[in-house]
Length: 154
Image (cartoon, rainbow, N blue to C red; front, side, top):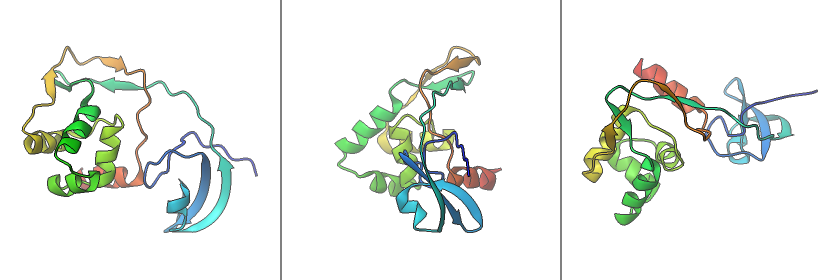
């Protein structure tokens, strides 16, 4: 059986994978890490291949996140001696979202507003224009949890 997958991150938790395990979890076949694979029935295991990804992000007309947003969130969190889980609880978000933000993920506007309110700091700058911009770095792919959250909000 010859299998190919383009992502190299767990579809449940977003953790980078060195080995892709395909597991049947609640009726769906997913590429998962070892920890998440224990939630289902193992189907097949394959070595993950890293592929370069060209990413494009759309910048809002009026606002965009300042560069180093994730690093700044991490520094502010650590200055308050909070874990990712504790910060997530305080702003009513998932710890995995905080982790992804600190690794360069650009969150939804509502999450940015919660962080601004909690830290008492503005993370937005005036933006240039609504033009696609190559970011030059790969953003983490969406996990199933992210997709479910988007559907819930729609």
